Length: 322
Image (cartoon, rainbow, N blue to C red; front, side, top):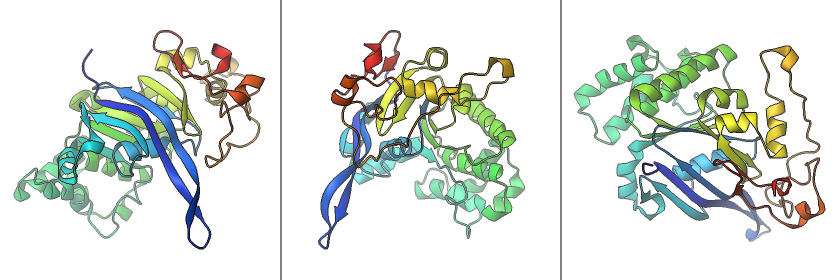
């Protein structure tokens, strides 16, 4: 097996809670609590869960938009947090991120061509007189025309803006793209176009994706492996087919029950979870899901279940699967 492109080991990201006149730290928000992921070159790994589960924080911590609290992140065998600023700067073109809101990630006062090409100029990857041609080439690969280069972000539709976000990530010829909810704000028809674009770019450019989403129907069409997060922790991980055909964790089953099916008579029985997701500042003891789990037992409240392989690379953290 080739060396993994990305290895995340026991990653933790805690945010301090400060209070009082002196703003002393009185607690911690455990946004990411001991996550491990391995992604092979050319793979699309889907990370799913409810809002507030810590998915986006994982992506931002991997790419060092925010610092980790603990754990290790290796990219091509290099520990990212061992790198000095100038060393990280050299590596940044190979790791890019596509954000959920394409409009807020673009400067409304800068033309699209300049927004896409500024990274090439900043990293001195292409001579200045060749940047425009390179931008037009990347825009074309993302389904946009050359005349779009001189327009401003407000002149584009939501789907076009997301294509611009993809073009801005692709311009640096990355190996890894972290896509944070890239289609959640788009209409269904536009979602399909963007998903097809992701597939096409992966085939032509050999890209590797960490695809963060709460929409399991999108993940099913795009990803080869899937990890399910709940309240900062990974509760289940498996190949796409295994996850959708044989989910083991009650939380995963509840998420899958909400996915629409194309044939009405095959409609799944909907599982409605009671209550709200607990606060990451004060997570439940034992299994974090036990406050909402319909199958919770006494030991679920007392002991944290081990995240273990139950066969064929299918991992689950649940006392029911012991």
